[in-house]
Amino acid sequence: MKNSAKDRVSQFLSEREKKILKISLISGVVIVILVAGIYTYINHANKMAYSKYLEAKDLYVQAEAKEEGEKTEELKRATVLFKEVIANKLFLGSKEEAFIYLINCLYELGDYDEDVKVIQNFEKRYPRSYFSPWMRLKMALIYEQMGKYKEAIDNYRIIREKYAQSSIAPEALLGEARCQEALGNKGEAIKIYQNLVSRYPLSYQAKVAEAKLQDFSQKRG
Image (spheres, rainbow, N blue to C red):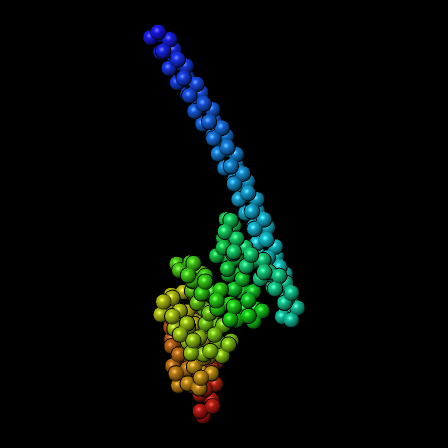
């Protein structure tokens, strides 16, 4: 009787272990299939997004090769594609570059309000980006184009103070001087032009500043 009871217990445990093993094997296969499916989906989605990104870049390049009034259609199509790429969470490429292309497209299309929003979104996402100084300059240029000279000056000053050693610092000083002129602050503009010539004498912007100072001098005379 004892042996019979032991045999039944052993058989029960053996059958239970077999069931557990079977369930484990089935679960493992299911997990492998799911992981493979998810990987395939992500890989496919990324390829599709990257294809859109390349198409958008090609459209932007085509637009840049055209005359000013003939590039609108390509820029609009590129804008739509860059927005889709940025919104795609499965895109594994450089969204920073997609942002920059989108910002340039919107600027050339003259959609300044939308461009400002995109730049602000870029700065939130990538606060330490290598492209931050150029984004700040673009923001200043947009405000200047919109006639919002005080906002433009604020952004030009940030560049002047925060990125004084960068290659765009002379452009920021020149832009600030232009805005001061537009506001009728000629005295302040002259000081900035003089500062530009003094700090960055070898820059192209310094040559422009010298010409402006000469023009002011002749008008006074």
